[in-house]
Length: 318
Ligand SMILES: [Zn+2]
View 1 (tube, rainbow, N blue to C red):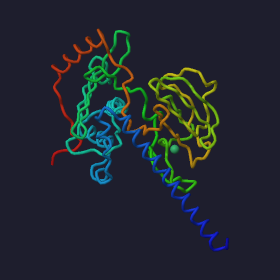
View 2: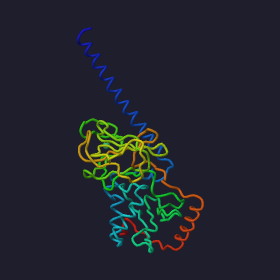
View 3: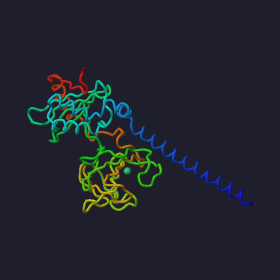
View 4: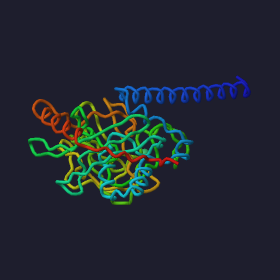
């Protein structure tokens, strides 16, 4: 074989490999998207959440910022606003664009100063509402009209504060330079910020995991698992097989492994497949049943009949 044709073969082989890799990536991307959509059922808020038009963001701002501005305008105390945002945080991605017509209702509980009895949020034509309810067992929580808890099986953001730095999906790697599938979301937070288990579960792994650095994986009910990577430190004594509660501190934010700075790389898996933690439709952590549901329904109906709703629009009429 002469030099030219052997070179031509090498070039052809290389091109073939490049095409093969691109094809593989496309499949990876397609399956990840399909999985996200499958996990999103039933259709509802997740679909509305999916509209994240950059033009809308520039024009209308983010829902959370809009809520804070409207609350300030209408004289609602910041702690009440924080409490309200916590109630909705598991259900709606409040970082998405607000729209004209969006707004909220908040009713404080006179018997328990500073606590919210009822809150509803109208977002892109859909309203979600939650009622405070104390179960016979003494647990206090927020439930929708059907008795499903506002708290979902998993938290979308397993740390108190944190800026969403990199979303889920195809991204350009900040260090390695190439495009690849980002299998989780990155929450930027100060070094040493506590990271909590997103839901109750069992520790599957806790320790060093290559480029992910110090990593914890938790297995949850219903085929869900969560991974927390680049930790500065894993909580002392955390071992595979241990049970953890929702909100239990499992480690501290760090920059171990392949990382550009302190952040939490957070992954959610459903039956072993990566899904977008910000977009999946998560099941409620708790669903009221039987006599508890009946008691809740009585209280909710009473609250509905006595409440004078005062709607706070996110955009003032001009
Ligand atoms: Zn990441």
